[in-house]
Length: 289
Image 1 (cartoon, helix red, strand yellow):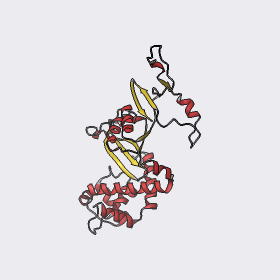
Image 2 (cartoon, rainbow, N blue to C red):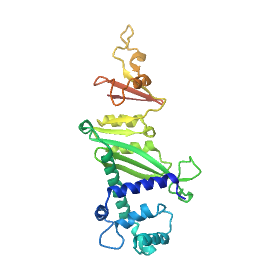
Image 3 (cartoon, one colour):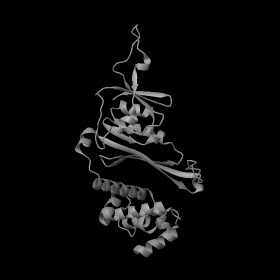
Image 4 (tube, one colour):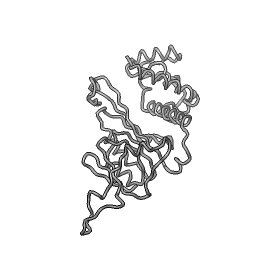
């Protein structure tokens, strides 16, 4: 049986789909993606009905049962083989376009970004991943992460541009795939004035340095063993003029600093150009902030 949480999420998705996308819009999207090339009895509405409303377990339900449900609910009669042929690349492209359009409209309806965001950043790149289990028979192609009784799992990596409303990177792979590895792959498309938002799983000092080198910005959670330093404006020197290395940088007290921040505001800032060093797990990264 389907997990109750997944079932509830699909129900919410169906409600939002019905609210934002009319049958006419769905049909137009189906033609643009090549799913509908000519008039036939199986149109965009039927695929959406089958995958969202009629059978939330469409991947594990037999073709014969799907055909029966489709006929009972929509009056469309198809053979199992005919339906099987309709689950093709174009159908995937159409469903992806439906999801993208729905997400964009939902974000536009609920998010109010200030003009400062648009003038400061070219893109706000949000990268995250989700993992779900598969039957053990899929373990050869989709090996699980090993954290559960299931040996098979799928991980979906998704990077979304909040300003432009576009998906930048999408990857479907084994559940054991490392987030940090995919975060490095996504660096290829980072451009100047991009803002990259990433969770702790993507934390890598070399990646942060690469983002900085491209003239882009980032917001990232830090590992517990990470220490941040700023260049000491008044370091100490030996009598012979040699710099005392231990005074070259000042470690920041991040807990104290965050406690002084006002919600939604900025209570502190550094001068325009200041050398910052980040140290974590034996690695050191420095950049100009």
